[in-house]
Length: 452
Image (cartoon, rainbow, N blue to C red; front, side, top):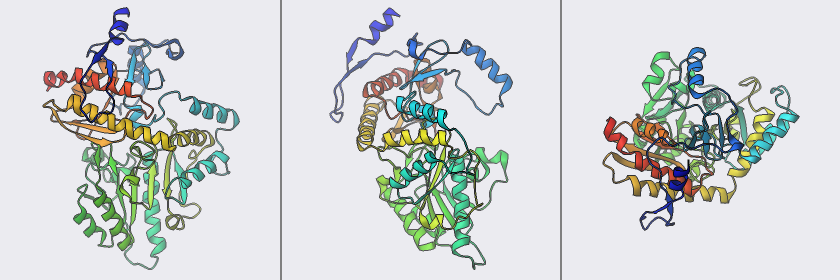
């Protein structure tokens, strides 16, 4: 441990591009298995070893996940620890969920206080945290009303139902109702049957077909094709991610989103922005669509909203809400006091202008750092995204790099067709930690040559 500590404390001067605002020294971090241990305050509480947990999982859980061979037992800030106390720098944040990192003190306080007060009452009754969270979401967004659910896929299911009901409500005498939907290439909207039907990857849909009919897949960014189809009068709603996460970190253009808005207005179709992954501060804007100066009729949220507790939300305009009546939709668990109080703590922090400004600054710094350090590698095709949702497209599978980084103490994700490295760290990550992440990725790049 002593030699490692000496290595980590030794500064290495690295030349930066002129665009980088800060010239720093950062810590050497080799692409090797490092014996890093947790501090006492975050030591794992389990007596089971990692191997025992993985063996047990294989016997008792349905095999729906191709898991990384890591057991996570505790975390603090941007660090995670396994049962043996090994430390990992987390650039996954639970797939863009833990925006405030792990164990944020205000979040913990909100959860503990509410757990001691009231956890669940169902939606048969009113509860203060639910109404307060909805009030705050309305106040800081385009929306007039909120429907709470338990996940991103449920938020999109609600949006599907709301869009169909809106068309029947506004055009009751139409013999041929607008019931179809538009979705786009590389889209991901969830895994339940309606949201799955809107998800472009055939391998996600094929085992469960027939899924919901009436979904038209168009090329992401194709203004002409979308405009023409919307004009047909058959489209109840257009579902689009301003920034595609699972699909490979592709950002929409302003022209594309504005054309969708205009065509939907002309035809009476609804425009739905899926901000489950890219919303709530991830881009440096509170809502990703703010960067495009386009307002949707419905926006779906989920991942970061409650800091790790399950929640989804469908934010809607008054014209959409007017079509929804008692009994049209519902959920037993959705919007419970515990999860809503946790979400209030998250929203209060992320919505502050200085917090959002810090995300923009760190995102720009991280992207330029990656381009400077990794951009010259022949396997790196493009670095894209903004804020702290960044994709590194490779000309080979990203899995060897992901595996090598994990073995060196850095957790990252893949996206797209498996050839994109997805970086969605906690929004609280420091520049020093971003530098460390970039250095580990640089040191681990040779893994791409060995495996591919």
